[in-house]
Image (cartoon, rainbow, N blue to C red; front, side, top):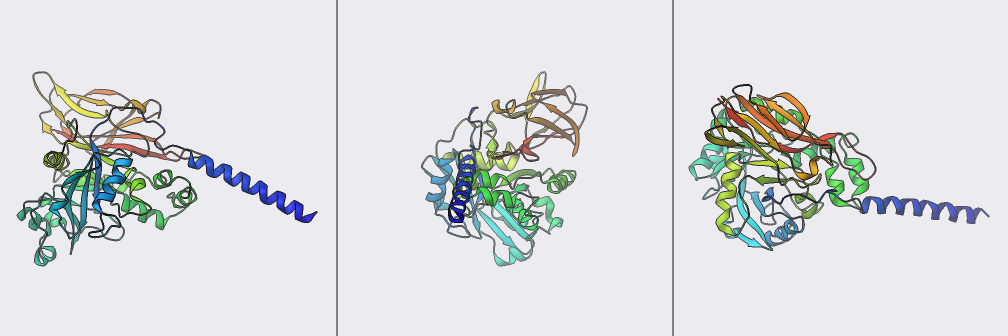
Length: 374
């Protein structure tokens, strides 16, 4: 009798767990797959050449699975120009993550890596001397923060959102930062599990806003993928969308993509929430050229326009509009607003964190680069 009861309890528990596992496994992220395709790709990815687990070809195959157009490789202290190629429809763009005495810096478009002396003394100036553009990697990271703020005038941008930051913060606070929930979901749905670590990087965004008062730094969101839990899950988590580039044809498009990242003509989107193609942020005025992300121009008579992706209504997305780092508005989109005067304007689009059984806290789905009006 006792044996039958034990078997019944065991079978019932197995059925319940199997049902829960199936629910997680079949919860789709993104839940909304409609929308406009816009060129987007993964920024700051490591291959087996230095720091990662997969070859550039394997990374391209993973990127293709999640619909990306390009991948910016940033292997540690290694530059592999021969990696510039299209694999499985994905453009691989080589770059370098320089490990310096002041922290890590991604070097875009440089002709060489830094010398030991440059890493020790003036890494940002060294990257500029090599024809590159310095983007400060995970500048406020718990393990390897950047410290050479005296060289800030040489920097082009920084990583306002880094998956490495999210991972380390989740390790420090596993229950409140989604690590435990993600671990339960990991065997069934890796992409959903990866998304549980997302939180708004309040401190990082505030520091970026403050730094822009002295230097117009652009932002990029970095997947910092090394191949665990797997490339496809992490590459599918977030990406950089490129403004005004209709498609990617081949290696000749690499300079256009790098130029967009360097100038801020791009925005960060969490693809684990939904595709973000169709988002745009402009400042228009009669008789003069329109301004888009990364641009600056005169303020009078400017109309600020935010267009949201098709999925926004279904996700109950809200536009959080910032001026000089302070939130002005929190409204559903789309949005047209007369610019109240000079300022540094940017947009965040927030939604509820997706989950298999519940919705988590409000998190940024889209983070734009600013438009500066003078």
